Structures are given as C-alpha cells and as structure tokens.
Length: 132
Image (cartoon, rainbow, N blue to C red):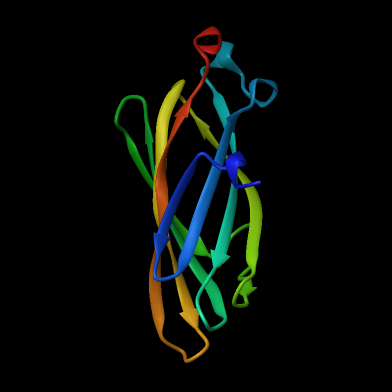
C-alpha cells in the first residue's frame, strides 16, 4: 500500500506520507480554477502515543504567490495515534494556476506532554497539460 504514496518525510519516528491527485471534475479550468485532492497517512513508529495538535501549510501557486494555512488538527480532528498505528485523512487544495506546491508541518504532543514538529513533505500540484 505504501506505493500509493508518492512523497514521504520522517521526523522523530513519525512518517508523513502523501498521495496527490488532480481532480478535473472538481476543477473549473475555463474559470481559472484547478483542484487537487491529497491523502495523508501519519505513521507513529515511536514508543509513545502522540496527538496531532495543529497544522501549518505553505501553499505556493504557479506565480510564486504563497499562502499560509494554519489551524487546529486536521479535517476537524486532533487524532491520538498510538505506537505502531497510523491515521489517514483526505483533504483538497484549490489553486488559480495549473501548477503549484504544498509543504508544511504538524505540531504533535507526546504522552509525556512535550511537543514537537513533524515535517509534511514537499509535493507538487500539477495539472496534466490537457487541463491547463
């Protein structure tokens, strides 16, 4: 199943994997709107439970315009991931250009109360040439 994910980053025994797909049916190319869906899997290979507290995204469009998106949890949840387990979620990203990129980090809290940041790998957002 790991072959599904094209991008991965490892930070302190936590792996973040990303699969991204362009969705032509959600895009309005004639109106200059492109849409991608991304599937994230967060794997906890540490020896203690971790809770995802916040997310920080850096989204760059094809013109180099950067948007920062920050907030609590992911898709309305602050999941607790026990050792040896993972958490999956799916979200989306609209852009006003047919190309761009995303990257960022999550802030987690360990069972002992300490906090740490986990990298979200850089991944490109690229519509097929036929959709641009």
